[in-house]
Image (cartoon, rainbow, N blue to C red):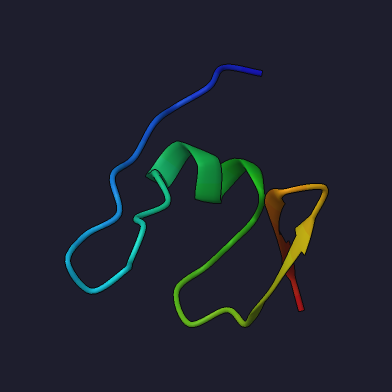
Amino acid sequence: MKTEQRKVDQLGRVMLPFKLRKKASIEKLDLLDLKVKDEKIVITKA
């Protein structure tokens, strides 16, 4: 898996790249679960 880097903006947001969203089947307005595991942020579809 290729690693991509993104900056956190002034409001604390991070944009997920289109290719990553497509690969994970994440669509506009999807609800996502966020948790911290072993010092990593894990994002899954709710």
